[in-house]
Image 1 (tube, rainbow, N blue to C red):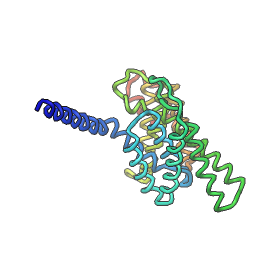
Image 2: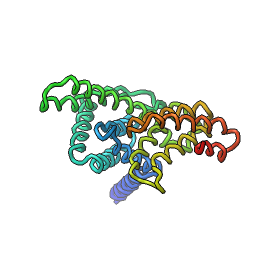
Image 3: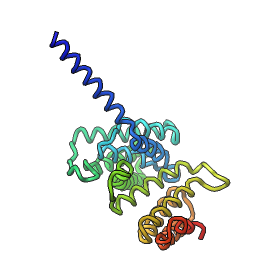
Image 4: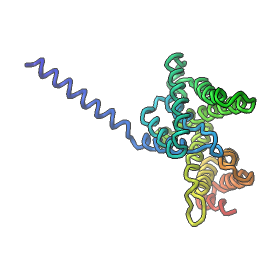
Amino acid sequence: MFQNLNGSEVENLQEEKTKFDIRNLFKEKDVFLYIISLMVSMVSFNGEWAPFGLAIFAACYSNRKPVGIIYLFVIIGTLIKFGFSGLGVFLLTSILFLGLVLIIRPNFEEEERNEKQKLGIYVFIASFVIQAAKMIFSGFLLYDLITAIAMGLITYIFYKIFANSIIVICEFGEKKAFSIEEVMGASLLLAIAFVSLSGLKFWGLSVTNILSVMLVLFLGWKHGMLVGATSGITIGMVLGIITANSPILVASYAISGMIAGLLNKLGKPRSNSSAFV
């Protein structure tokens, strides 16, 4: 009888542990990360290159986040924006990436580092191989080869940015201080996610531009002129490339961030007034 009681107690403890683990998958900050992953996967360079889905998935994998749910959200975002053809490319690339990780075990870094596993080379190879494989059906062109290499490099770069910035989203309010690189990376991640809202207008104004400018103003007000101007240049340049906007966008973001940083000693309202300069 005591054995049965012990067995039932063990089963109850296992059930409670399972329920607890499931609840942990839907913590507030994890849900926010899922939404960001969905939005980022819907962004591309001029509707042609879409490196952000694989980059955010690999970054979450490296940081030991619940990648199963993130993978599902990235699939949904890719399907909504790019249809079945874009989804097929992403699935092939992600499957090759996971296969490489399972076959050739990645190096593990220190627990304190943001990038827990070095997955950059796997991201580059998977992205390059799938893009280069198209030449089998269309014939070899030097342009296609250069495009495949560029796609692999871009995906690798954004993987590194996302891998070192996810900590800001997941530990915001818990960690007392973040490095400038982490803050800049997280800001760029949010700005790219905002691009998925480019079709939304509010009184004729782009929601993407409104949220991006607010982000730059916040960084300038919080961290000073240097961070404000640098974030304005970085966010403006990346958004300009993604959305094919005028180069003047970079100048407007940079000036807004710089003025917000100059006025940060005067308080938040005066810093935010730089958006109207």
